[in-house]
Length: 104
Figure: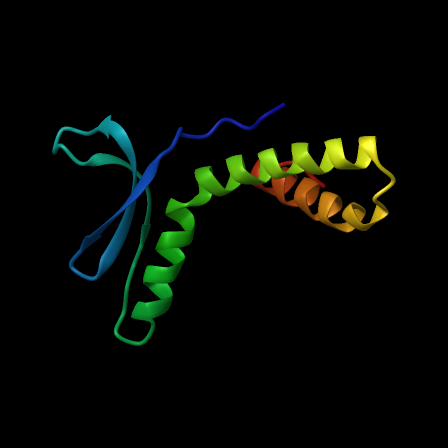
C-alpha cells in the first residue's frame, strides 16, 4: 500500500535565508503553496541548507522515478537471468519502503 503524502510537484521558495518546500497548486490564504517543510538556513551551513531543501522538494519526483526504475528492473529480471540487477532491486525496494514509512 502506498503511503499518503501531499502530491507533487513540490517547489522551493527562499525567504530571508530560510527555504520553504511548498506543494504547487495547493495555495494558502497568502497565495503561496501549501508548506510541506521549512529548512532554516544559517551563515555556517547555508550551502547545506539549500541542498537539503532541494532534495526535499525533489522527493515526490524521486519516489516516482524510483518506482518506474524498479518496474523496469523487475521486467528485466523476469525476462532474463540478470542477477546483476538483484542488488539494485533490493536497494530500490528498501528506499521505497523507507519513503512510505514501512520497514524494508
